[in-house]
Length: 88
Length: 146
Image 1 (cartoon, each protein chain N blue to C red):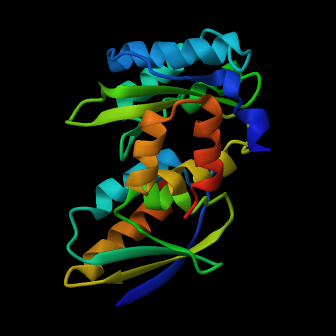
Image 2: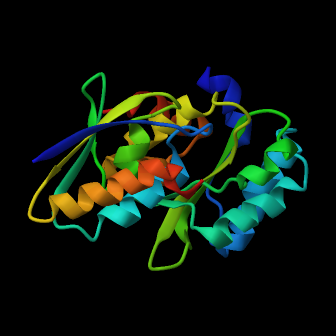
């Protein structure tokens, strides 16, 4: 399993659009991808409603846990998404 | 907090099926009539839908404007239209609840989070779809959090 922390850096929080991009990019991977908030709540990163229900705001830290055969490739994509602010 | 952003006056029940563009115009028009946005905001809502659907799963769509139209928002507000027979949002997706959103700051994020939590349960979606009063819709969103 791979685990890495990221900071939400979006003036509009992590709601619909970044979450849609996340789901779109993670769905093709076989691995299980979870997004966890500091308070312990977590969501399936392939579920839009799940990600939206985390209610993430700008500046919050999240942990991404990826578990599966293609976890390396999936984590590379996650890193790229956070680096590019989900294309914002 | 939520009640100021979403009121029973801004919930329409038992709307007959129409196209998703008509549905977006309907919720956009409600946002205009309630003084949340200028009429120009509707262009931003249509642009958003063209770029990427606002259908979020489990029978729910949340039309809103692209960021470039933020200046057309006067006040944060939500409106809800219930379509018991649904609106075709494309790709096999049918929305039974269409929620128009005008979000100025981040005051609307709390209620959006609540809505996302509520509608993860398909039983709650069915209750929203067939609710008989606007007050019922509000209380499902307020209490439906798992």
